[in-house]
Length: 160
Image 1 (cartoon, rainbow, N blue to C red):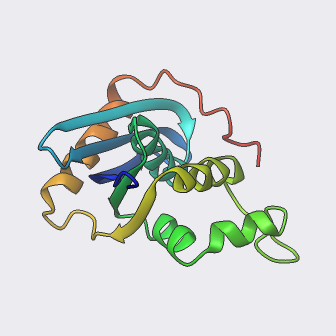
Image 2: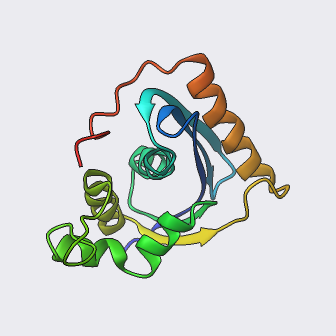
């Protein structure tokens, strides 16, 4: 009998001052057994969209075993890119959105696609700043990360 994946709920958010500028992400991981973890990191120079994606990547990468994941984010960009198959299409087209326009953040989408092969991920949009407790917590973590400790370098920023 095949083992069933673990059930995990993730909330992720990204924030950026000036966009581009110092940025951070926050993530809340809620395990099916009741455990809870929080992740955050601050970067010297990045964009809001990169922080949104990096928050999800950090949370998914943190999971030790293949899991069934419900990922809540206030980033329509991320939800649409993954749920509507845009990221897969961009990759298949050599990271082109169309004949004239390159896809942004291909380094992050590549990682996200790989993580979604390991985990069964459902992306769910949640309205920002609308009172969702965990989304609000992620926002506070993301803002604190770039305000208090933006020491990391976003290696992909400005390269694509």
